[in-house]
Length: 374
Image (tube, rainbow, N blue to C red; front, side, top):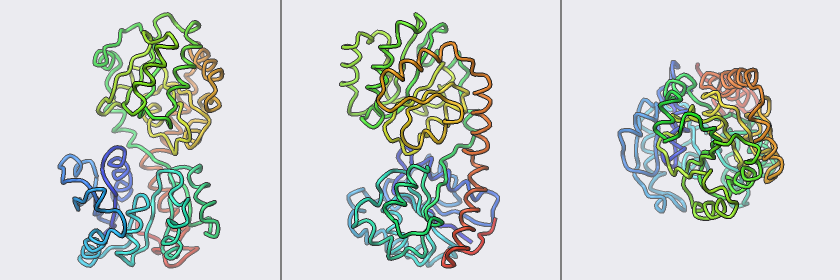
């Protein structure tokens, strides 16, 4: 038996999303065939997909707009060649392709808000509701989707959190001294880090303002390290200058496989506005870092049991938490975070949860696959 796994693309972070879902079937009777609608064949992507077979359709983003007839025809041909039990499709477009190209039950995975906010987007999924199970990366995304699809049973719109291969991520981490050497950070520097695209949704502007306000009470050798690129880079650098903290802030730019360097940090801050989930939080937990997080979106669900939260956009609250973090005794919190990572956000935890959700959906709606083989 095969599982058809359709992804729009493999650019970050979606290659890792593909890996997460293929990993659910390791040790099971199923073989996973992952199909990327866009993107050229790439051996590294093929290895990173963790699938039994990877197919690159090679379309451009422009070519899969509209009805996506070419992609539908190729998926239909593929389905006719194998004994597929069901399909997993990431995001709206691959879900449409799966529904129109096959008669398979479809597990539709959603990583962002507002996927079905528009009426036109709801038409097709409403027509095919009886063979759909919607999985959202956080309760925050799930609750919004339930509002957009109000007549759907709750059993068909559920949460399956993002996750990591905890052992693999831990093994990939560079030792603290080596990571600091690679990033050109002195041993005695106190490092506050933020990793993410330089975009309004990540709200690094509030982080800069909170840092500037807290700086007089932070260690003299404190550095704010911002990893990532994006459209607001120049605006954020100008803001750092206006705040008088440019010498204490370093914009590192895009760092390939940035999570390898997390042990170079002393504190991790996520300042995002309506983050659907926040994979970097799991990576920070794997590196055993103390974390401060905004109270917006799915990130709260990851860290609320052990990390201080600040009101989204509140410079004063963030500043206070930055100061408090310096002397805060974190050993018990780090252990709690490690336990939560294993029990809620690991591949093993997700595998158990996934099959439970499949079973529950089947009990409610018998057009979905019956008690999927483990």
